[in-house]
Image (tube, rainbow, N blue to C red):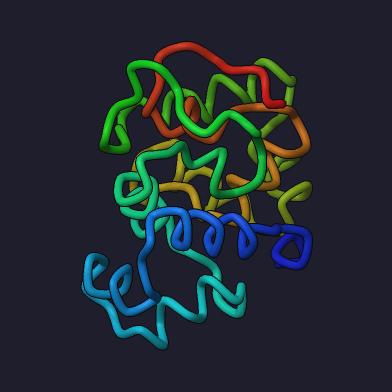
Length: 157
């Protein structure tokens, strides 16, 4: 996935961790993973799965958009703690249709297959972090909105 090299969340993760006076070990314990695994996220050697990204947003009391560097807005009013898979699949499909994108066209943009997009839209899988980032960055959409954590679309700043 070529978009991974364009994602830049390592500074935000470190900033959030240090702001909260936490060590990498502290965050890793809260996530239930090894410190070395968390370090892979913070150094951006590994992609943070959506589930972990949401856990980090809860730990640091911030938006997923903020962690991913999509927004300077640290937190949204009335943000939900959990990702809503049902809302997410609907919003992804609505996004695609609003931009007149077929599943095949979106798959081509994201350098994946149509069956992967269909899986996201049918709720078999939650959208993968690199795909979420690319859509949000390219179309100026909120990841928190697409994931059902907030009710109203946000302009990214």
